[in-house]
Length: 463
Ligand code: ARG
Image 1: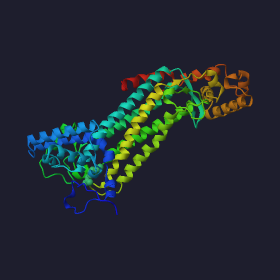
Image 2 (image 1 turned 90 degrees about the vertical axis):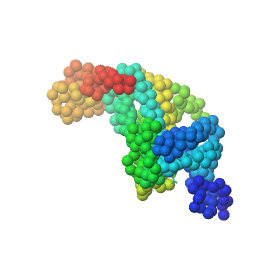
Image 3 (image 1 turned 135 degrees about the horizontal axis):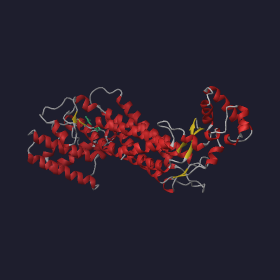
């Protein structure tokens, strides 16, 4: 037999026995939803004013309630508020304390309201702020990327497909590819915010309320443009949280891919960049090590953000209308997503800002991987050779280079002409690495001019 707790629940009227201790622990959300305290109080103050407007409570009563709520806010901020597990959640903890402070009049605050619409409001208020914080993090990161791109419109790196050296590109072009992804992330969060930013209070438990409250007034006080249109939907809906987690999963996926580049680039094998001491760690045994932990952790944490999205979707999939206690399980995945995404953006920003990108000597670029083989084929196409044939001739040229341990630009013209008489002196211009980059002059290509054009466009967008 488990011990019985003595605290009486606010809903205890119909109950003869007290709640089992295990049950109290199991159903309590206070240890994680306490972080909603400021939103819960802001929502309650607005609700209280709406009750006055509807003449449900008197101005004098509302004064007592509001000053009580303000005192509670202070208690939280000063770390003095003592939460009680037996009071289940943040809403009941605050209400009970209010009654302690303001007396029985505190019990009037919950008129025309249920915890079901109250919690929906709190999460929306919370997420509305957090989505802005995430947007700020994205913006900060993008600004560093554009800044780095400006500094590297002449730094050439090998571009890869299948993780094999493919064609030369500008480092700036590579960095701006991530800016494109982050711009789409930003627009997804912006879009999600439209659906987060809707006011549910007044839906009460599920059916709406008997009291003639002006819901639009509450919305206005809390800075919402819109109110929910169906009380059942309003207390059951967590789509907005799923959308936030889905946008977060995509954002983390982008960051994680970038992390993979960074982990590779910082190896001695690649040697494209060096991370700062601030965002790396050492090994407890190998003194020479400087590990890219920041990048690895962001990559690793991407998994839990995906997991949080799955938790929410699975939690919601079989819920009949309207409120079900399962919905209380929305908070931990949501809070964890918010914290993980904000932390990842901040660390990523710092890691990039303090990283040192190295110029790769042209000689090294030319030595490995035949980066301009495609240019050689294109050269032949411009001499009117059909592309397939040009591809074949170039393949043979590369094979000849491999067999004789040389790079493309080390083959004398006579040898090239033995493979195809179409090769003329100007071929060397085509296989020069900087010229190969310069010739990718199509809109969206890696030519310096095109990249600068994008830097200009993006700097205007991300002012
Ligand atoms: N702590 C609850 C939650 O997070 C609040 C709503 C409880 N409503 C109820 N009818 N038990 O979802």
